[in-house]
Image (cartoon, rainbow, N blue to C red):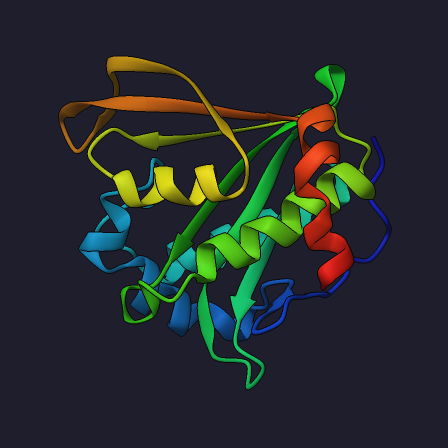
Length: 192
């Protein structure tokens, strides 16, 4: 699976998904560094520093170049950063894992669902994926609702699987197959 040379810009009805830039560092620190955001993700540390944000943004560019992952800044049309959405690619299995976070000031607006939907469409249409997986902590049902709105099916639940800040947390497992997306999901791509 080879990604295009340049990362595209994806648009939804209300959002622009674009590559992260080093000029986003302060906003990433402010949003992802919020303890309420960090506690519901596997990989965001707390406290979250400018060095963390710079390293993360630079890693995204390297991952894109190596066709390992694609990550987009979720922004409003005025370029206000709201969060992040991405796919970690597993080319040997023709699948990806979806991940996202939204800054607390933007919670409850449907941004995660809207951004993830266009990225899921991109994964199936442009990358030819067969499957997209996603997981969320068991005590974060809002993330599960996003996955369900995308047409994902809850496929399992692993008790006390993942340690976060010294506490083992339950994880819910979701998946979406290309054939199921073709039946109902890809209408989003045509509506955009």
